[in-house]
Image (cartoon, rainbow, N blue to C red; front, top):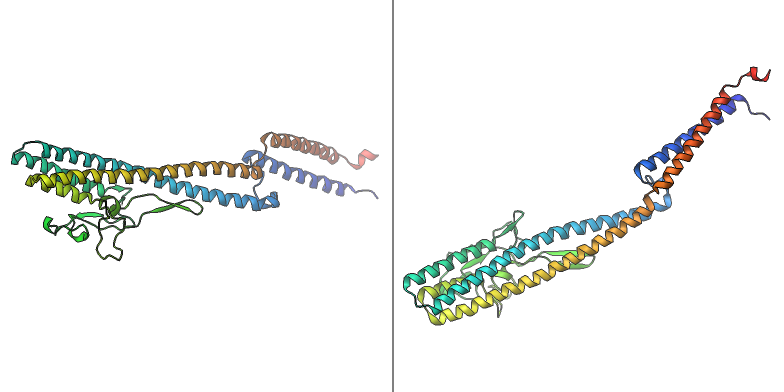
Length: 324
């Protein structure tokens, strides 16, 4: 049985079409550097590729969240440094008031400086990052600290926050971040913990928030130091010196804890970056084409295509006259 000339043309045409499709595919692989562009390219690789992409997406989410939180922690540390400077300066002023023989005018000047330091402390306590109050807990859109218009030094009670010099309008809920699956870490400080020395807020019992034993209300400490300087009360001045030391230690302790947590976040970020590199290597093994191999395949396919064109051209020139 002989193949007719029409059959031969159809076979050659189909062969050229196949070679053209294969060449286009190879050129696409060479241009994109990807050997897996659609499920039909390698069905067995689809599941691990999708799984790896999902893991990469999770890693990117962790890294973005940790990066934002680390920025907030670093900004918070700057505020805590300013708090430490304020408490140190207040202590220096109080020492001058204790040791020096001063007139009423001199004591007024020192007391007025304490007032300015207290205002600086208030500004720091109401500090913001990206338009959010950083010491307000979950109430980050609410100004956390305001002056208490009903404050009376004679009625001050460390066990009743309504008698304190300043009021807290935030809450006691710190922000926690999931840095790895199943591991959460606190990434900020609440205003009640740092500035009022109470680790809980608006919880019952007791109904009135209270300064924790051994801790300090920084606003009250500065206010009482100012009052002791104005009245020139030696016993109160000595108490203020002790309280200023304790308040500064409280700030340093919480700052150190925040620094440790920041270091943990940085460590988690480095780990996630390493995981990301490993996942990209896995994905590359399934998706990426070998550049040299792809180039060689293109050259071979182009050679085969050119040869097919030559054969087709010669066959198409045949006629019945060639057999006479």
